[in-house]
Amino acid sequence: MSSLFPALTGGSAAQRPALRFGDRALTYGELAAAAGALAPRIGAAGRVAVWATPALETAVAVVAALLAGVPAVPLNPKSGGGELGHILSDSAPSLVLAAEGDQLPAALDGLERVDVDAHATGPAVPPADPDPAAPALVVYTSGTTGPPKGAVIPRRAIASTLDALADAWQWTGDDVLVHALPLFHVHGLILGILGPLRRGGCVRHLGRFGTEGVARELGAGATMLFGVPTMYHRIAETVGEDPGLAEALGRARLLVSGSAALPVHDHERIGAATGRRVVERYGMTETLMITSVRADGEPRAGTVGVPLPGVEVRLVEEDGTVIGGYDADGTPNGAYGAEHVGEIQVRGPNLFTAYLNRPDATAGAYTEDGWFRTGDMAVRDADGYVRIVGRKATDLIKSGGYKIGAGEIENALLEHPEVREAAVTGEPDADLGERIVAWVVPEGPARPGLGPELVNHVAGRLAPHKRPRAVHFLDSLPRNDMGKIMKRALKHG
Image 1 (cartoon, one colour):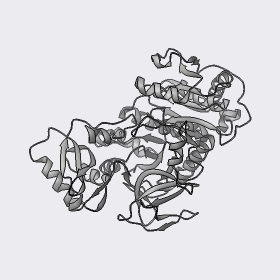
Image 2 (cartoon, rainbow, N blue to C red):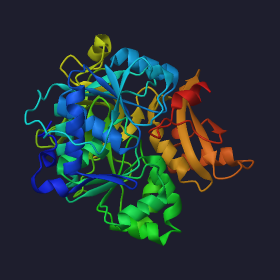
Image 3 (cartoon, rainbow, N blue to C red):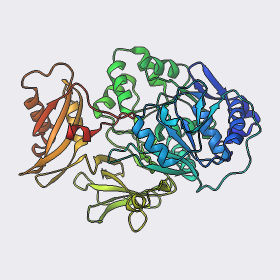
Image 4 (tube, rainbow, N blue to C red):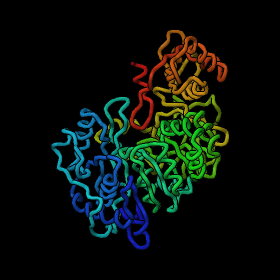
């Protein structure tokens, strides 16, 4: 897909750095040669699986699949046998691409294997583009409500999302991105690898996250950092006592957090130490990116900004009543404020095509007039900034006639000095409908009386009806590979 990556077509860009993983790197010319050598070998495949380790070979494999017009299915190397077996039987790839020497699990034994040579040389990048509506990737959801579903991501969705982010973040070929995100999902792969390549810039992947690596790369000319809240939480805990890290972060042009909400307390600690604010954005596997705080906008903790160019957004009540949306020029319309909670619904070129082999699920994901139901609940500020309340299924608590978002209670708990991590769920209650339950990882051993103290702490900061009715102390919260808390495990564990 040469127009997706203009820098791959050669010329003056050939010598520009494109990818670096540790001490291994490729220029645009070398990436074009390696992907060009691989593309003809996979061109006849229906789909190809990619063993998505954090390595050069994963990036080469995905770029080669895009050049060949063959949908790629990124595989999480940490997947268990059952999940991996489901993904393989559902997506039916013709072969698997992996780095030479990678040990693949038994579930992949039946597939032809093609080793990826990141330093191979091949023909020039093909000049023709497949149909923009053609599938580029099949990315599997986290499967929190059943087996993972394969979201078919068309080529137009990748291009439109990356161009919209370039507008929102003033992202150019001069930017150097550093991150340590996994490469089997939207955040790390599409935003974190394909994003820099579309702009003609460079990405430096840390392989494994560490504050030392972040400081080193930002201190050596990197301009942007992508991370998830667990990474920024580690930064927030360290940056106050690490002048080198604070200085490096202060030099960055853009710090971006995504995949889950970043607690307000971590925003504040990073801002106080560095003078820089973290920008949050919002998206899903099925929609790619929907909203973001703009680089030239106000970074406001607890919000995910405004709709990206070309993306239509509205908030809708349970009965289908539209609370509010945005005009074509982005001007917000309709009701706003904390009492107007609605589901985020989306239309635009950023959307997935279908759930693979699941026409029923695909149809159920859309309204009759073509809006995708995200399942995420939000409110909107007067100036149009979106604040995510939480997932409709797990984060919207209906207690005593009130609709309460788990996120604001979690942020209140995190303001307490003895709380390291917090999650809030709703549990059935005969009187209230649902009662609010807090799950807390304390900074040290939970002392006697801390539970009631936290209940009063929340009631004093929010409103009495938002206080937890029970507090459970844990050693850790269950999280998936993207750092999201798996609340269903809490509710049933």
